Length: 454
Image (tube, rainbow, N blue to C red; front, side, top):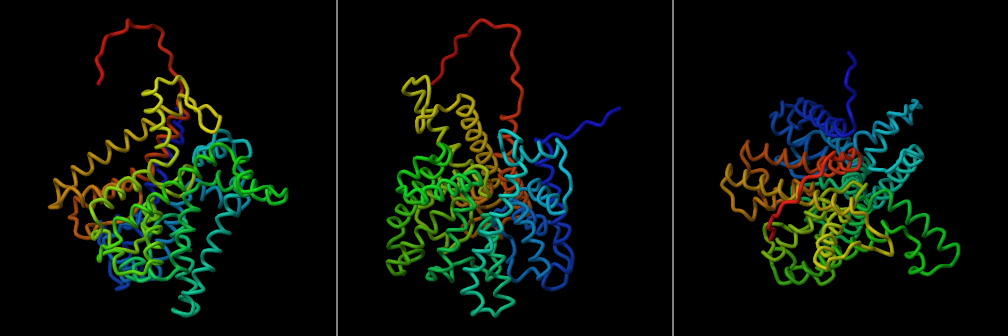
């Protein structure tokens, strides 16, 4: 009897699950804690999940609770979770010069959400090089501040850790117990972090296209507008939507929190602008915090829900339903209202399949958030605003909290663990499922029924 081969749809979620379990077991060991004692299994599982799913929600202070060994395990999980388990395994195979079978190439194709396996190894090599360059550059910029402050050894370690954490959109730090709030007036730390978050959230396909077109444009003397016109339609849309979300989010926070003494009120005008942009960027799955989230106005809370839900862009390190997904879902609604028979973006027609897929992903994500929020507020004595913030943050792998995470009971922590796991693998698995499923044609056609909608 032949063994049934595991498909990509099954392997990718399972690979994340196994990484979480192995990470949790390692974090439970006495060597992983600063006190040299065994760590509570649920605390270890929560930390392993938030690291592998690059979320950032924590139930214990990462800086003081875990040892250097524990921090290394957490960083490895962040890197593996941010890039994807299959991608990292493939990188190791390349380094060790292992041969790739056809099945390996197809698995890698699915994990990167590519349409074909042609040139997939070249893409993998390029991803490896670009990721190394970006994370090294980020670490070098952090080192300008961290080495003078903490010394050479600790300064380099802190720089590497936070560069990887920011680029992978994890939002986990080891410099204190209040994220980056002590650095809200430090432009170097704030701007470096924002750049790493944005680069991680844009997606590999966008990097490649932008770098090629910009280099060619500079050589030929093109203007920025001419270079932009030569981007692919996907890159154009990602850059446009991302820029709109960052700027509009920053403006909204600047206005809403300008006089709020609990957030931006006591900062200088320059720091208010920087922190408004930082908040707008970090909410789209990064998880670093420069202001207390629980002190924000209700208006800012609603803006936060929206930005967290949307997240970053496809084929990157960010979470959420993704910028392209939410745009196509809204476009689908507009097309129906206007009774358009096709939707066109940058003179390119969007396929009906893409529109349907986007709508389904948004609907499933919304339903999941509603169910998990109800479960959380039923099992914990919390209000709906804080509960919804926590669940959206977990489901979109953001990692920001209104001071709720550490106070959740065991059931609440398990609910958030489930939310983080579903948030990390859900959009990926759905995209692969819808892209790879076979089309079943019915052999017969039923008589149309009359159903009243709306």
